[in-house]
Image (tube, protein in one colour):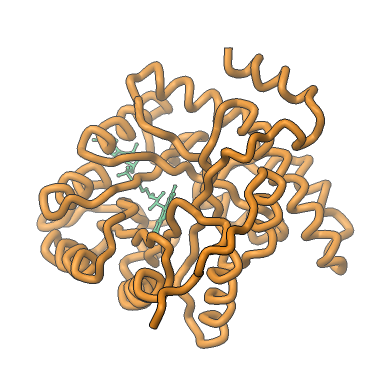
Length: 308
Ligand code: FAD
């Protein structure tokens, strides 16, 4: 079925048969310093003309970035025409505290939450729900929905969440999150389109009928990606490590290789029917912009900023 279709499309000329109907969203993290804030803001300005469906801002472990996430989301909502989504987690917070954060977002005009369980701030520690807190993301989605009519996105794991009993149990959990009122799932990053297609097929078979948006991480730093992947159970294929061998002192070549790998994966995903791509930008515009361009997106001359 879909796999075969994807394989057939691979024989087509590179990027020539893309209809320009892909949509994207961009993920950022809240900046720690003024310099990082400048970089983030430059990136937002650079990516805004691609008219993303939304841009999202992550929430640090244990709510450590609560204020910074809020400030970033609120500024995007206030100063740009972009639709901003705020990540929110259940870690080390009571239901009341979490709902208070949600209320602040609602008051600031934010209408989209990426609802997550989160991980404990100490690496390797196990998540333990507080008696007065949310038990997990599904519980959080239900709580948010009861509070305000937010649009809600949730997380999905093509290579299975490390704590799940098995892949089927993890998909059941995804279904619970969607049944609780989430609109779509955004996946953890992965490096094999087949992995995504298998997951999408298994989810569909289990009755998941909402959109599953692949999360794309353009990799230009394998060591950093290995650290991130180790924590979330994503496999880094050997070929990827090999492709970056000898490029440590060649940042330009590294970026070109990174864009090539990610664009090729996106092309295969597109061939398999994907029309929305979520980019983990790491607050840098260039790679994501180039990949979007190859996917057929073109910058539109819309006003990136609201009139003062
Ligand atoms: P849940 O959906 O609650 O699942 C957690 C685990 O519990 C899974 O293994 C699931 O299978 C299992 N489970 C849940 N309910 C049951 C049940 N009833 N019975 C049996 N098993 C169950 N982290 C942050 O800290 N900040 C962020 O901003 C952030 N953004 C993210 C964005 C995306 C797109 C993704 C994919 C992840 C993000 N994360 C973020 C990471 C996320 O918080 C971790 O992966 C976390 O470990 C799980 O969160 P979840 O929302 O998927 O949890």
